[in-house]
Amino acid sequence: MPRLLITGVTGLIGRSVLRSILAEKLDSEVTALVRPGTETKRYAEFQNAVEIVNLDLADIPALKDYIWKNRFDCILHIGALRGGRKFSRDEYLKANLHSTEQFAEYCLENRAKLIFCSSVGVFGAIPEELPANNETERNPDNYYHFTKIESEKVINRAVMKGLDAAILRPSITYGTGDKGFPYQLVRLVSMNRFPLIDKRVWIHLCHIDTITAAFTWLLKNEFSPGLSLNVADRDPVQLNELVNFISRQVHGANYRGLFRFDRRFFRMGEWLAKKMKNELWVSRFQLISRSWFYQVDPTYELMRLPETFTIPGIQIVIAEFLEK
Image (cartoon, rainbow, N blue to C red):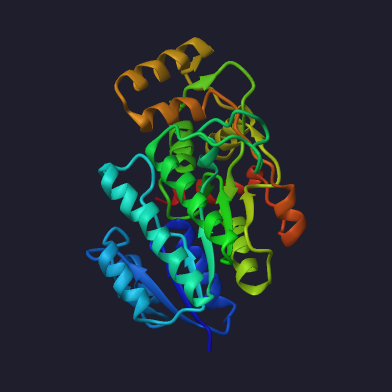
C-alpha cells in the first residue's frame, strides 16, 4: 500500500486536505507530522485514522533522520511558519526552506512524488502585474515570501534532475477555524470599524474547498513534473461589494461604517509601517488599499474544479463569526 507523509495538518489547509483524503478513502497509509507541544485537541480527530509523529520542521537533523529511516511514496508538504508570526529569521529559514530541501532531496533519491504548498505571496503582497501568473516577477517583500520563493527554486532545480513534483499557490484562504484576514474582515465590518478606501479595489481570496480539491486532484491524478498553479476563487471580487455583502448578512443593510478614507491615509499607514519594519502591518495596509488577483484559468481547466465565488462563499466565515 502506498505511503503518504503529510505536514501542516493542524492548519486550515492541511486539516481540510487530510479530512478529504480520509473521506475519499484513498488507498494509502498516512503519516502526519505535528510540531511537538501542539495541543492534542488540534489533531485529535486524526489520531485513530493516521500515524501521528511529533517532529518540528525546523529541527532539520531530526527531520532528515526520520524521513531517511522510513519509506514514503508521496510527500504532501503543506506545513510552514506563516507570515506575520513572531519567529526569528533562522526559524523561518529552517521550517520553511530547509525542510523543503530535505523533502526534495528525499523524493528525488527515492523516486517519490512531492506536492508542495507555496503561496501567491511569491509575487509579493501586491503583484507587479495583474493577474499575476507563472511569468510574473517574484517579489520577496517580506521574509515569509522570501522562503516560499526560495523553496520553489529548490523544487524546480530538483525537477530538472528528475523530481516528480507539483506546486500549488493558494491565495489567502477562508474557511472554518481560521482567524486570519477573512475572519478579521468580517469582524471589523460587523463592528462598523473596517477602514474602507474610496476607490475600486479588487481582491482574490480562496475558498478552503477549492484548494482542498486541488490538492486531492494531484493525489489522484498524474501530472507533468514541475506543474505550478495559482489557486483562488474563480474570479476576484470588488472589496467594496464584499464589505457590503458581509454587512447585509450581519446587519441587514449595506456598510455604514465610520471609517472611509482616501488613498493618502493608506499610503501614510503603509509608509509608517515600513519605517517601523513591521511586515504584518505593511501587508495589512496594502491588502485593503490595492488590487491583487491571479491567473487561475489553467487550474480550473486542468483540474475541472467546482467553481467557487467569494460572494456568497464568504458566508462560511460569517456563519462561524456569528456562532461564536
